[in-house]
Length: 246
Image (cartoon, rainbow, N blue to C red; front, side, top):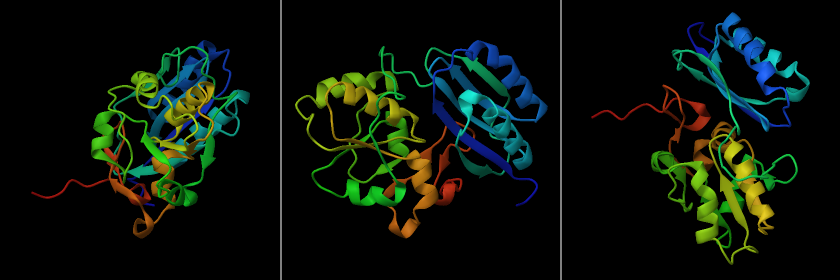
């Protein structure tokens, strides 16, 4: 690996986190000590972040996070960047690590069925399965799976209204959902199961997991996966999506 390359890790974990406020400063100080930049969100429901740094430094930072009992087993989806994609390091306290705004939604208690990237094509190719992209409109425009439904949302907080409006009466239908790294789908499937949707599935590891595992020649993905950093878009193998020449 060239020494100039930067490693990027996207991660989340739903877990009861009673000491979010107490962890904020230690996490921030550890990140700065390792030269890490990016954003980490801490909330009573867990942790969510994307951070970047030299490969060894990033590995040390992830090990530091996993050293806390609440974050044991924390998985990160790693990719590379040619230069640092973040300007600074932020650790923020939030009410939710992904904002839906619906009280009582708890993915640690109830969630949809995970589908491995290798099994995803077969599921979404079934004409009886409704495939839903849980991301925002501008993300969908950058790339999505062929035939997926776009909820037409501008924020994840609008997803519950989409379910109530567009999916009423389809509680027994098989529904497959996906998002960038999996976090929005965990919460979306938890919300839907609580409202009587029994056959709800979601892509394990999200689009990033699929692009890392499924070869281009077998892929049903179209376009690029928008990411919220300077790279903007990733494609198969989690390579940076290069802009087309004029």
